[in-house]
Length: 379
Image (cartoon, rainbow, N blue to C red):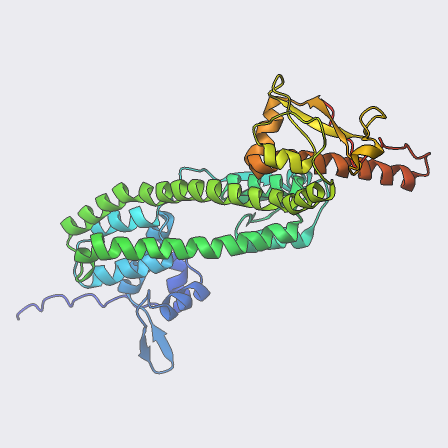
């Protein structure tokens, strides 16, 4: 009698509970993988779902990739390439380059006590929840008194802004706005490099060699995005900060012009200046012997007051007051050489008026300011 060959072993079959036990995944996780296309659907037998060894192998493969730091989206792409018969060696290297950190900054931890202390010593649950939502803080499992800080630099910026007086709500709103703009810049950079660098690798499933070459390109080009942003941000901040400063400081210029016009005709006895027209309009002069001096108007003395026979309007004389040269140069750079004297005169008048108002408001005896249209600056 001919001996029959042994029957082939029957493929293993698992219920979802058995598959969960063998793979280490939960039943809920297995179903989620199925919904996301990471795990093939089970075979349906009557009212039961039947899983096999292929499902078990796939679950273990997913767990291994998760342990290596891949996201579920990247794992799905890798598994699709694997199912298409591609060698995953080069593809895994490419995905590792893209999924890896794009900064050298290391995450840190911070206790809740230190976090509260960094923001003025008060506990603000809504602000903490906002920081978690934005990803500035991450909660740790089973730890209510400690957080993971993915970017210590970003948290340090927030603490500095808050210590300077910026409300927490304004900081979080500013971060949302900046993040949206930065994501737009990142998308433009990716579009640019895809069009000019990576397109040859994307119109077909890459071979292992092509994937390795693309990974090397990512390593080379990765720092360029940060370098470009750093350089352009520095340029923009310098340009705009200078523009903002000049705009806000120049708001005093119209008042300086009005003050110069209100000071009346040119006083007698002024000496020549570097900017004679402007300084005569302001009623001040700069002595030739004192490059850093600006004249301050004062009430004319009896000897200086013109007599009736001269039929001239009452005029004021000038008194030279020495100012630091750097102060004069700073004003000249701000308002221009033609408005320097008028600006300093207006600033002096404003200071006298402010001190007089302060004295009146405090109830103290009023200190009579020097007579004349303005008190000059003191050196």
